[in-house]
Image (tube, rainbow, N blue to C red):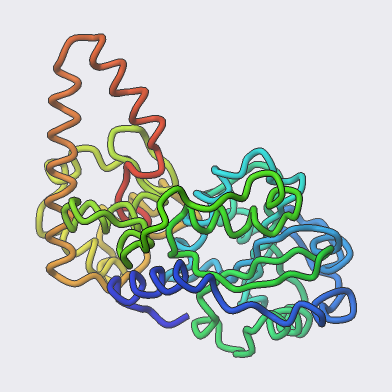
Length: 339
């Protein structure tokens, strides 16, 4: 999977919202298209790919490998946000399947450690298996490279019963991805789909879920960081970042955001401690620029100060703030793991 800078990811997200992904040839995707080979889940169960994971289901399919130091953790965290929003259907009508692109190394045990860092509920299966079988599945879904780092950084949405299939971006606005997977259900479309109230065309930024009045750090924070971190709500996939700009050395924090892989290669003791605590997921290298990093650090400092001020107010106000923070859990974090 090739690393893309944040600006490129933002553009990809906007395009995905505007065009909804490229629809696949629905008529040919089904029991005669997908290999019905035996695969192994993160729990060690042996199942058949089509019969047990695809047949008769609405699915969201992603591609990962557990040693990824790039975007796999962030992609998976973004899907976790989608799963949080479809709890009424996950494991019932809608299912998530994450397929390794590194079957030689991704054992069920490694997949379980990776999976458990994000989600432990029903309806989400991580799979590995014989390399030739996994590659056959991935090839049918558009991942034809044998090199794990070159896999397609997108998700596939499908309804096996209706034959509808489409590609989408995990970096699109979370609400739009939720609607895209729900829209695979004809019953949901008939009962819930309605045109927007406003008939005025939205701007590119509005369609991507970004409002013009937000500071740059807040936009990056919501799009890239909130899937794994919170500020003042508690640890999630990675640590809570409340007061991180005070607790961590400024230069270390900057290096951690810009190039955690290099910091890890230097055997930094602080990062080693975080890696041990949040086993299974490591902060990937997102290609953050110095300007983006400065914006994020500024936003974290501002957000932490706002929370401190609210907590210093009378109890009634404090309780109200806590409820609000819990409600907006998905938007209260930064970076995809371990600062």
